[in-house]
View 1 (tube, helix red, strand yellow):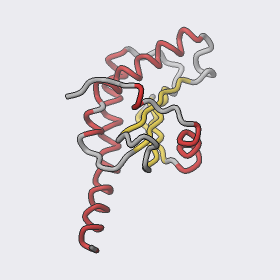
View 2 (cartoon, one colour):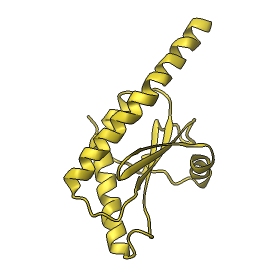
View 3 (cartoon, helix red, strand yellow):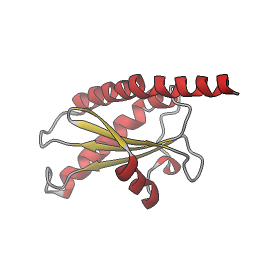
Length: 137
């Protein structure tokens, strides 16, 4: 398994981020939220991921940066859940949405649950759409 988070996998395109917030869908597992949009990425990557922590919940940049580091690390270690079950390219934005200061272990557990919830809802739809396309041809 590849446990890296390379630069080409980071969500930085303003166009893609705009699409996420205008046309994207959301899925939550307290205290995390995942906003996603299915569509081709500019450089052909399968997954683009960004993280965000609200300034409203954590006034100090030190605290926001800590939780962003934790989110990136939990994504890096658990992204195989997404990559193994998705065929189409997706863009994701990963949010930490509470004032509670959860431990790394709790956030990691919630990340796994959130990714599995996403796959349960959208991995199957994606597979059925792909199968329907094959039947029509």
